[in-house]
Amino acid sequence: MVEAGKGEHVAGLRAEIDGDILRFFYSYGSAGDWQQIGPDLDSKVLSDEYMQRNSFTGAFSGLCCQDLSGERLYADFDYFEYRDVKQD
Image (cartoon, rainbow, N blue to C red; front, side):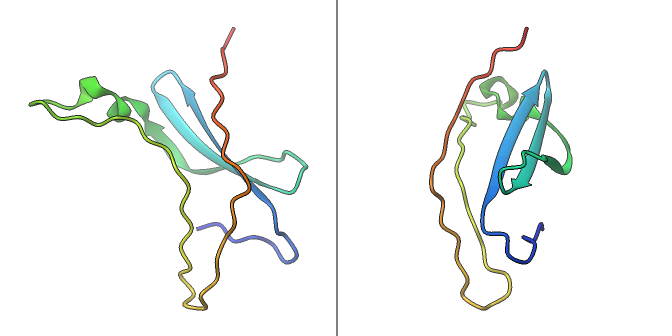
């Protein structure tokens, strides 16, 4: 879990895939200081070829926020953008 600092109201979330490695990042404000969340993950499990016996994984993306404090807090998402960034 990552908590926003006092007075912080805007957070950025980002995912990057580098070959078979998937990484998630967050940033507060507009500084662009991205911090990795959690470990490097295996991106192959998102592929249809990973499953067997007529299963379908299908890669989906979305946003979710859960209030674990019990204080009925919420989050608003202004936008969601997907960009396919070509690597040189």
